[in-house]
Image (cartoon, rainbow, N blue to C red; front, side, top):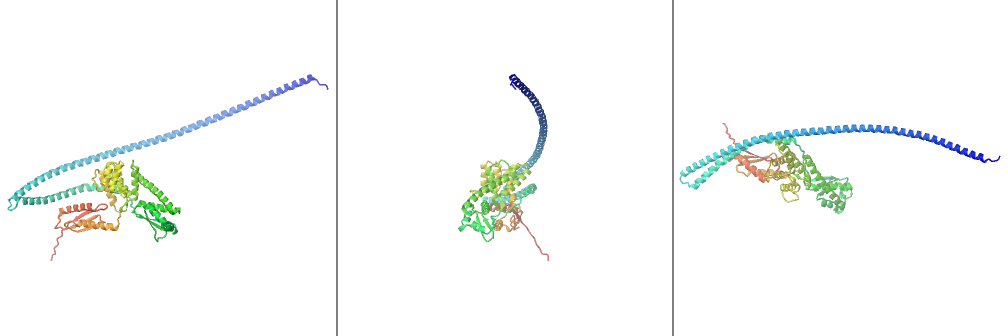
Length: 518
């Protein structure tokens, strides 16, 4: 069949037209599907956007509700705080009113006492004028007596006047003492009893030795070391003595310095637990233990201050207070004693309407000198006052430290309360202990002091040396002289004897008349 170019060309053009048409149809179909997909995507996006908006709106409402509840709680809490603050203000106002009433009462009492003193002064003036008149009369009478010179008459007159004046003064002192006791005893007993009832403190007797347990007997040999080098290293580093006897599985640590004893005990326990016992390791453990003890003392001082509710206390004072934890007096822990004195002084100050915080501070620091008196020259009173003054303590606190043993006069009521609280803490049963030798020596010295006065017949120490009873010869000592003798014995005991607490002096004068009927 012959080839027709025109027919081929026509077929070619027709094929191109059909291809272009098919392509156009396929493109239209693709565009339609793309539009449908785009519409679905837009629709899904709008649906998701609506869901997101709904969720955000719900979350916003929930958050707003939570914020509202939290705000209401905070407002309620602030209202409670405001109410509490208002109640405190009301209580303070009531306290101020009560103190004003108490101050007014004391002012009235002072005014009455002033009037009584004026009256007594007037009576003393009249008595003085009367004595002068009697002296003049006696001089005239003696001048009439023959064979008596003026000098002899004057000596006789002075002797009689002195005797009469001494008796009158003794009677006057006795009368005033009884009046003072009647007015002050009741109030003082109430205040002291209230302080003791409101504060109770157990007392633990301090020891000078500690016992450290060993896991086995072999450990004793390791602690002693070759030729005793380990035990010597421990004793040299700590200053304590290790006693190794026949008691199985124990070692006794002995030292009169409680800080060194505690360091030795803790270091020994660490070495036993660690197992490495040799001189180099011993020195390392002891040094580390000393630092731990310093931290313990600082913590003890901070705890004492926190217990009393005091503020603005110097760090050096805290450390010194912590050292008192390892100091004792007659077996009584010095830090516990200081806390006890602070509580007593604070309670009594509150009863009298004084500054309770200042009284507690003075009571806590009154024996702080005992933390340094074994390292520095001077008494604990002098060192404590100097230390407190150096660290800017209130002058009332410094005076309370200086005066609590009577070394200087008390310049404030708080100083007097601290001295009284110190006596209460030291004198209460079970607070202190002493050796039997010191106890016997104190009783013997107490009886010896009382026997040295004229007119004393017998002396008995009773109530563990807290009271001395003096029986006098009734022919040598009369009733008024008995009061003077009790006062003289009291002053001599205070000047010559060291003792805890108070000692009561009782002078007994008794006359018995006996007859036998036959």
